Length: 192
Image (cartoon, rainbow, N blue to C red; front, side):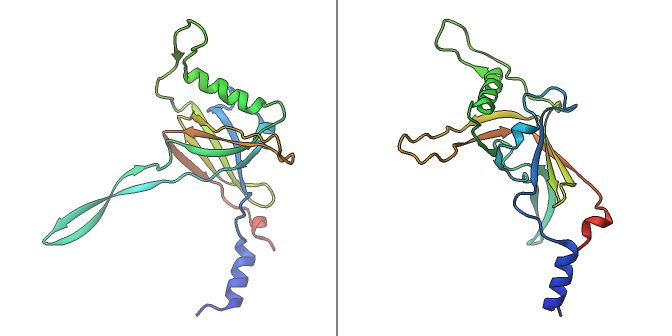
C-alpha cells in the first residue's frame, strides 16, 4: 500500500518535469555548422512539444480470437511540428523562416520569373535538435528530427487599438522521422 510519505519520498528523489524544460538546440545540418539560426533566436521560442511516435497495431485472428502484433513505426504530427515564436522587433526570425520557405518553393508572381525551388526529399543532413533539460540546464534527453523543412508560417496579428502586447507567430516544421539519445543522469541530479 502506498502512502503520502511514499509519494513525498519518491517526488523528492525524482522531482517533476516542468513545462519550460524543453529547448530547441539547433535547426540546420547535422554538423550544426550550416544554420540560419543561432542560440539567441531560440530564446524567442515560446512553446513546442516532444514529437509523437506510434507502433502500428496489426490484427491477427485465429479461431475467433484476435491477437495484436506490433507492426511498423509511424510519426504522427511529422507533417507539421508546431513551434510558437515571439516576433522580434525587426522581424528577423520570421524573415529567415520566409527565406527558408522560399528555397523550398517560390512562385514569384510579381515578375515574369518562373517558379523555383527544391522539391527533393530532405535528407538526414537537415536536423532539428531538441534537448530535454533539468532544473540546472543539464541535458537529460536529446531528440533529433531528421529531414526537417519549413512547412507553414502562421501570421502575426497586429491590433491598432492594442495595449502593446508582444506579437507571436507559429511555424510548422515537417520532418521524416526522429530518434533520441538518453543522457545518463548524474547522482547529483537527484539531490534534494
